[in-house]
Structure formats: structure tokens, C-alpha cells
Length: 138
Length: 138
DNA sequence: GCTTGACTTAGACATTGTCTATTGTAGGAT
DNA sequence: ATCCTACAATAGACAATGTCTAAGTCAAGC
Ligand SMILES: [Mn+2]
Ligand SMILES: [Mn+2]
Ligand SMILES: [Zn+2]
Ligand SMILES: [Zn+2]
Image: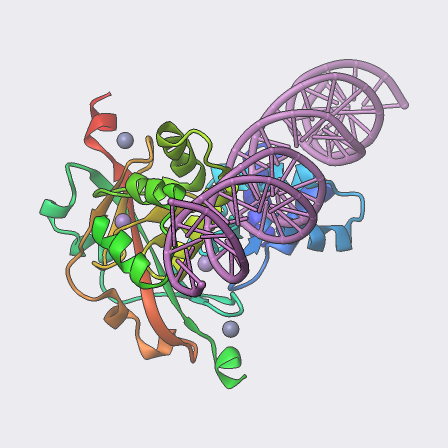
């Protein structure tokens, strides 16, 4: 995720301790944290960071296209740093675990013209739901 | 939607004015209202109905499988009375208009085993995004 | 090292959702 | 028809999530 920091510097971002910490927290695979989860973890690394800064930074990262907002959970938005490799999500209905998945085919092509109601369709989001191995064992 | 009221009576529901009004508000095609939108419209028909009752009634309808919660909008849950005919959604990114759509194929079959991480996958939700004819004209 | 405008902060406020204690009533019993 | 009572509705407190503002701070260019 240091390449992210590079890109952001290139876009004129001031590199503050807060932004570095948010970027660190978002680093990794299958990361889909809520804003307050990002805040908690950020506080672990930089105790004085505020909620407002976390919300601001996440909002900026989304505007820049470096992070995606996903709605897999019907309560809070989740923030996904895996913005540069298109993918969908598989969610455990019991524990909420989320994995990135790459289905075959192109779901966009499966929407017939007759079902488009004159819309220009540009994007599709697929959420699979089920039970993860951990929850199935229990 | 009077068949809905019949089914609910069959399930032991007391028929109150409030529940009738919520059912009326949810009647129709392509209806995907937030709880507070349901409340506003219900107030138009029965001014003294409370927010709590609307939330309670919607929650019960969801538990009974008569209404679906959908997460097409990343802020509030939306309530969909079209629970008995499986479908997906097409959303205008600008004005938020939502249409029910029926894509070809079975997206569940498009998720390879290697991409299931040991989950038992039971359901899939597809959200198409684009621009509606109204917003395109403006 | 200054300066300055971008950044951070605390906390108020807004929206969405949940819960409880009290009051009301639908629908069966009489 | 009236009474009873368990179920339902209500007001409003509380919780969770998200937005905004005014004031203080500091990264980065000079
Ligand atoms: Mn993801
Ligand atoms: Mn629908
Ligand atoms: Zn699980
Ligand atoms: Zn539109």
C-alpha cells in the first residue's frame, strides 16, 4: 500500500501521520472495514486520530477511486481497498465474513435490453450470501 | 395486496388500522421505500401512526418473508414487497430510481468452486447501476 | 526558520434504527 | 353486546452511523 501513498502524493496530498495510518489500516486482502472499525484500528496506531479525519480520509479515497464503498452489510458502509481489480463479494450470513470473488462470465451482458427500461447501464455489483466453513462447523 | 392481508390474518396477525396502512403503502410494482418514506406516506393516510410501529411492522413483514430488505442505497435499508418473484435491481446513480429486473442465466452457477472458500452459497443479489432516461435527458 | 493554506480536531447536529414503559384495542369468551 | 386480556401502538429516550463547522495545527514550499 506504499504505492497508494505514492499515488496520493502525486495527486497533491499532504502526507500526514493520520493519512498514513488510515492507509496502513486499509492494507491487505479481503479487507472490508466500516468507518468506525477503521477508526478503532487507527487509534491503536495513533491514539489522537479523530473520527472526523477518518471519515474525511475515507471519503477522499473513495472520490479518488482508490477505495470502494460496498453495501454488503445493510447497516454501515464498508471500505474496500481492492479498487483496481474488479471483483464481487461472498458474505457469511451468520458472522459477516467477506471474501473477494471473481465469478465467470459478465453479468452486465445478462441483462436484456427489454429489462433496461431505457437506462444506460454502466456497472454491476454482485453479492453472494451463504455460510462460511467456520459457522458451518459450529 | 389484500392477498397479503389474508395471508397475515392466517398467520395470526391482528388486523389493525396501522398494519393495513403499511400494507397499502407497500402495494405496487417497483416499490422500494425506506422506513421513513413508508412512515411519511402512512402518516398521509393515518396521521397518528408512529415511527416505531412502522419499523416494527416492516420488521415483522421481513421475518415472515413477505417483504425483502434491499441494500441498493448505501444509507438506509429499502423495503421491497415483491418478495415472491425472485428478481434483481437496476438503480439510477443520479436520482436513485429503482426498477426490478430479471437477468438471464443463473449468477449462482457462475461462481466456481475455487472461488467459494468453503462457503455454502445459497443466495445472490445483483445490483445494476446506470443512468435513467430522465437523468440522461437533463 | 517563516508563512500559509490545507489538514485535524472536538463536538454539535442529522439521519437511521432500536428499545422500553405506558396506554390502547382486536378479537375471542361470556 | 359487553368484558377481558394478550397483543399492538405510542412517545420518547437511547444507540449507531454519518455530516458539518469553527478553531487550532502543521506539511511543505519559500
Ligand atoms: Mn472486496
Ligand atoms: Mn425489487
Ligand atoms: Zn461465518
Ligand atoms: Zn435518474
